[in-house]
Image (cartoon, rainbow, N blue to C red; front, side):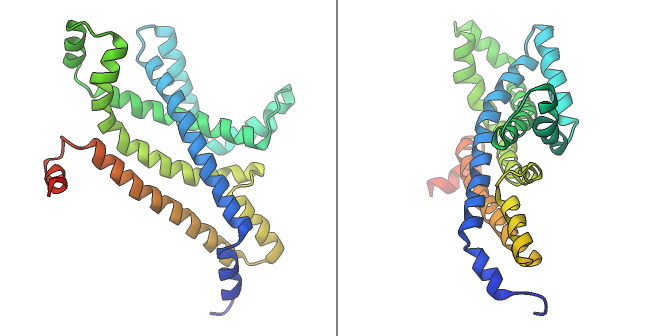
Length: 231
């Protein structure tokens, strides 16, 4: 194939520098999603709070973060805030931007999942003497999880690919390292295809994990799936 370097492609397919970038991408995804879920739960509970000030703060937060691009947010955090004396490292700025974004989107997913549980079940739990914590743990959370898990899994997939935006502030993840090698080796197509294959590999692996998680939390609701598991 004219213009395509097979030797270079196979060489960088197993290149340590690229593999380390993929590991950084995976680490950023795990950290952002873990912290994002925790922060998203807090924001979701604030949105559902009977105290209007908490609800309004949470609404403003989700409106602001979801209404502005992550790219712009990262630039503001990393290059804008130092102008007023607030400085973050590349890693700190990346994590802050990713977590803030994931928290805003996940809060709506979590809130919709909790809201999907009929209020009658919450009232019944209180009627038998359950505290709010017990009601959330034993009644609401198990039922809400079935609704929350699928979009939450899709968010993991999206976050994994979104980490590439952090390359704009020189975060040494997969795309940034690919760009560095392109500047050195001038193999643009080959290296971008290598990066794409690594993203595809990671998202495919997560897709398999997500399906197992969904089947687990869907037990008792999908009669066909339950029957298949029993065979």
